[in-house]
Length: 224
Ligand SMILES: N[C@@H](CCC(=O)N[C@@H](CS)C(=O)NCC(=O)O)C(=O)O
Image (tube, rainbow, N blue to C red; front, side):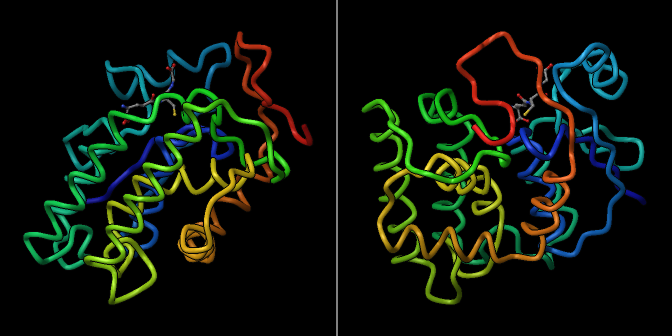
């Protein structure tokens, strides 16, 4: 049965990046439909696929799956050989907790460092609550790597759902020049070296849709 993933613009849509990079990294074939966000008609287009009105959305045969974390769970069940969650039960609990912490948390980081791959990476002043989010994420990543990451450069060794959940954080840390430590940088570099990352990034660079949003302090355009 064929899979279709409905996503937002690659430059901005952090939630869309999660299942997209998991599917690409795992070699799961799918069609993609890109809906540019926050433009006239965007909401109506999304609603054609899901009454929740948000991307990403996975269409799997007759089923519609929404919410990035639920999509990642669906993929893990549908493609067990892809190893999207660690095989070891203890590592799997840890990976799910890390993914859930991301799904429901880190509001200051999300608010002040909205994903924008067009932003030239350079250090930018950040309020203490963003730096506190950064510190927690750095500790969490180091903990995952120390406990379960011996088999590769990612949080649980091989690239999986926990990495996919944090892929937009890699972009936020990078583009907003957050002062991360060497271990964190090495992890970020490993994620950014993935062919899947490159493919998403190259497509984002070619996009021309500027998000029309009512918050004037959001650096949404190129070169800010
Ligand atoms: N919790 C949802 C969040 C999805 C979400 O907020 N998506 C944004 C784009 S990144 C969206 O669809 N915005 C369009 C709108 O709100 O009209 C998930 O995990 O998928």
